[in-house]
Amino acid sequence: MSTKTLPTREQVPAELTWDLTTVYRSDADWEESFNEITAAGEAVTQRKGTLGNSARDLSDGLDQIFDLYRKLEKLYVYASLKHNQDNDNSTYQAMDQRAGALAAQVAAQVSFLEPEILAIPADQLKDYIASSPNLRVYEHYLDQVTATRAHVLSAEAEELLAGASDVFDASAATFDVLNDVDLAFPTVKDAQGNDVELSQGVYGTLIESTDRDVRKQAFQQLYKVYGQFRNTLASTLSSHVKMHNYKARVHHYDSARQAALAANHIPESVYDTLVAEVEKNLPLLHRYVALRKKILNVDQLHMYDMYTPLTGEPSLSYTYDEAKAEVLKATKVLGREYNSIVEEAFATRWVDVVENKGKTSGAYSSGMYDTNPYILLNWQNNLNNLYTLVHEMGHSVHSHYTHHNQPYVYGDYAIFVAEIASTTNENLLTDYLLKQQTDPRTRAYILNYYLDGFKGTIFRQTQFAEFEHFIHTEDAKGVPLTAAHLSDYYGQLNQKYYGPAVANDPEIALEWSRIPHFYFNYYVYQYATGFAAATTLADKIINGERADRTAYINYLKSGSSADPIEIMQKAGVDMTQTAYLEQAFKVFEQRLNELEALLANLD
Image 1 (spheres, rainbow, N blue to C red):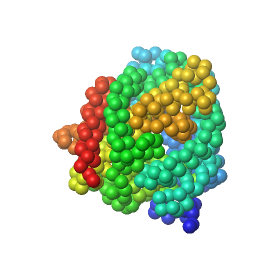
Image 2: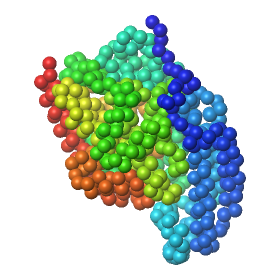
Image 3: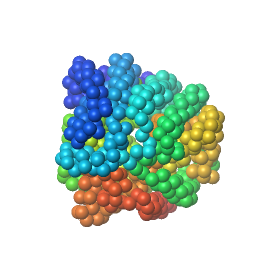
Image 4: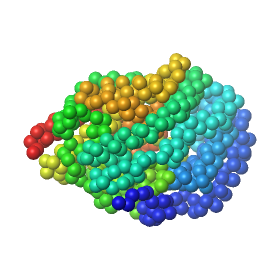
């Protein structure tokens, strides 16, 4: 038998790749922009010491600095996407590194911005804003800056920190290269006995196989590789955590978590409430896991049994073209304008579809104010990838609405609200599929998929959030984050979440070593809060009034023009309260009840 191997980048058909010529027509144009931005960065330093002189000086300085940011982001996005499409391409490796270095340089050059704004007396700044129509556009931004007054250092200190940003990010960059390029995975057998080259994308498919031997082999072989590098991976993660704690400490925050959440004006109580509510509802997860063990009819349920469908072979499979049609049908409830943006995305190649050698694993939506909101996929013909597509499209349409309805200064949105748009789409897809499918086995499969998605998004991401807070807290106490310490805690945490029905597989204790999001900064909890909020919003969109849909679309258009909590309150969800989490767990329990009933009546 021949071994299935991934295509090279050059072998992928153009229509399945994203079109980056709309960003720069050529790499030569990127080089020209690089030189222009370098000069613009030097020119902007002439503004240093002038911003507080008058309303005109502040207005002109903000315009010049944000124009520089805008050009830099475009440069950075192009280099990043080119690099991610083939991490083994040395040309784009270098381009991405140069963009990162230039970003660090620009950050240092404009580091005087916030200290000078904070040096303007509050009453004087208020007068400046009142006297300048252009400054009124920046009013919310200026309010956000002054809210952090106690945590901004001198211009000289901020310049030193900003200039070291690429150094601070070095451990995350090392993890990316190791994880996406240098780790060599073995060949394993698929359900048909074919030799397949194990990869992140292939693993995601094999772990859902109905052949238990296939799942077990993929699970054990994947973690065997990570186990060989556990000490290196502990070192990269530890260094990254130390960076978060250091930056929080020098900016006079009590913790890295406080610093991370303060950036979006999110109370730490939101984080603690999430963990508390999820832990209170762990018996629901234990019940679902026990159902899985019963239906699979195994003496011991292992972690590699957690993703295979409970109804046997998947009854739903989608080619990429079929998935595109389903996404349009599922999001039709959001209105014609929304659907037209999705159609544009498919027609003008916003999506990079298939896996190729060296391509970044997983999926994401990326872009900036002056580019299309591009989507990276590693397509497999299954329901999971349909959900991934509708999820990332939620991000991209959110970006499109924001870019077309906000000035550049508010032309992005906080991470806290970002996952709500994507997971609302997932909830709409689930509702659409359940309305379309009447066959009991198919409905059971969709319900099982939904419950798995809930498990993976609310329960699993909160588990990650607990782990992330633990490692930052341990490092802050001076406890070394060795591979053994990380694995011991992670293994115990995993057992607490999944309960007594699951065997304590030693491999799962290494899961921390392969999670890219641990190299972000208190990011993962927002998947869980976002999914829970999306449950409420999807219900309003499907079963509510036209005003509910209008409020949702207005949220997509809001960008960062207000604080995230305020934006979501206007959309119809108050995330400072527990009600949205309670509603999410009610939906989980209702669908678990239906799945239990369906499976009890199936042969």
